[in-house]
Length: 458
Image (cartoon, rainbow, N blue to C red; front, top):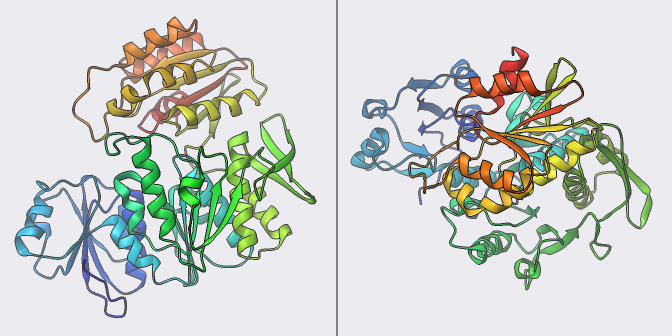
């Protein structure tokens, strides 16, 4: 594999530079004196920011974008070998790195690289940890998978000691990383277009944990079934957390919720350590426990960790309150896995609203088919469910599955459910059927957020 010499900046071209992670990595390299170019299909605030910082951006992907002075090409998992820029770089024999490989090499330049993994909760926990380290004055460099207003986007360039990043298991990309501290929040079946089965996923997380050095630390959720498969015979220190399991190193006690579902809790066995969150739901108590465990590993004072957690008000698309229309509260959430849907709807019910109306956009045919019954069960926790077409993302084969099928399964469970093929039809239905006092949630990893924004005129 090509190794970047960070003391000798070269010209690097990014295929798909407008992505939320790719743009951040390009920004880090720009600051370190590298010459950066890149391409994307459309302009955005991220590409505009990079241009203002000196990057050359091409709109549209073509072979001519790979100019004679390019020394290295970086690409994402979404780029296929028939991409014209990929083909041209290969024809020229240029060295190439995946986004994950580049991120791993950047991590090695920091004294304490921190990688947050898990099927769910990575963005929220990465953001919580960011806020704690910033409150502690540790000036972290951060790569987060969502827009965090406190850092002005998805990437923060700080000092050279602490690097915080999400670590995604899809295509085993996190195995290219070099963490000193690793977090595993949970492990469930997902990305079944890549993994063979749950055992295959466990094997991937085990390899991730094994990346940690002897003087490193793994923080892992004790509620993961057979979590010992991950921790057995590791050379690093292992710290566990759980919302309810008193055998964990960190668990919660005396959890209470305010009228918006935001929790206050104590650390079990440490009654002098109390934390209040500014985000709703029990799942965020779990994320906070992992963050507190990390703050203790870094010897951050209790008061500082508590202030950092309280200052975190959420990221875009994570139970984000978008506004109110006719006394209907409109929220948007990124949940696209049955476990995430259950957690989000459970948090929603603590909001003390009359009804929960959930507008769900299934994400990928593979996931919808693999978890079909689980989706129907999870969505049935809402009072009224509205479905859009499945968001195909990277897929082209519909596998014989549709939102109509999911609607019928939800109706068989005795719940009121409707399907509409267009956002216009969904919006008209909501205007006619939502009532004052409802909590309306647009939910999914695609573009369903537009429904709530259109209703609010955003």
